[in-house]
Length: 329
Image (cartoon, rainbow, N blue to C red; front, side, top):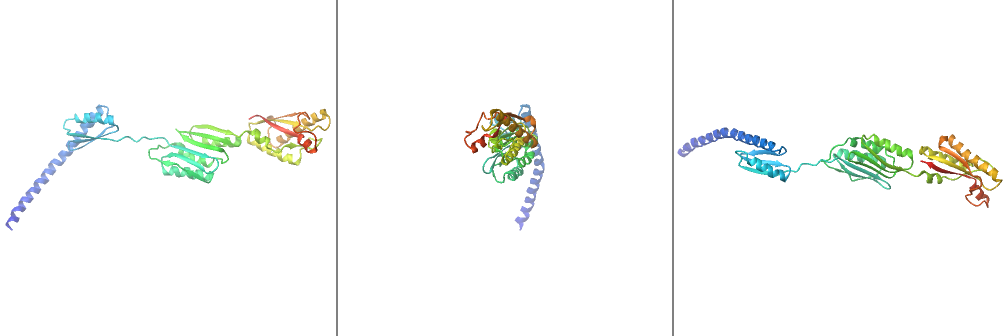
């Protein structure tokens, strides 16, 4: 019991002294650390090392820099500050921010998406837009927080939804703040719709899209044939004429030369007149279907340019024809 009475006052005395020392030296330590940090930061700034950050634990400094070369310089500067005991260095390379990239390619099979975007929301919006147009997509787009935003990313989903899916080898590329288009459109109207939609993305557009050559498509139309001794098209040829008008409507810059031909029945003079009449009949038929007359020229060659020999009724029917040649597109 006596020992407990002796130790209790001693313990209270020690605890009291500890409290006094803590109260006295705690604030002093913080003031010292703040003073060292302030003077060290000033020294770094004067030396052009504004990017370096310095903190203190007691008189020991921790300096964070962005390169090994800057670390050596910062260590020397902070070591020279009065009151600093040791200097520890940490190198943290700054984040490199890059612009977003996006590529859509579509031919046969699923559309393929590649690139890097800043958020999962952007990736999802691009995926959904491409799926709405192409049905199935192979989505290889990645998300990286170091990727910056781009105004085009906001408009791009709407553009993807408006893409025609009949462009061969279609590629849409967003890179370096610009949109590049490539591929082969079936006609001028489709290509124009593509480029006009791209311009609404609000970024520069490099238009490298091309248009399918019109001549092979015109040549593939079933031939325009006529009844013997007449400039009247057969019923089947009237259907072909409507197909030709549709091709010309879809390619409004194309101009066409219409060449009339006959078989060898009758005189050369009559056949020449008939061939011209047939060419004019096709020209008139196309204008009635909405094709501008200024885009069409008509010429007759009579029997001078047969397609096949005039030795059978079938062959003579083939020679009673009109051929069309694209002269400007």
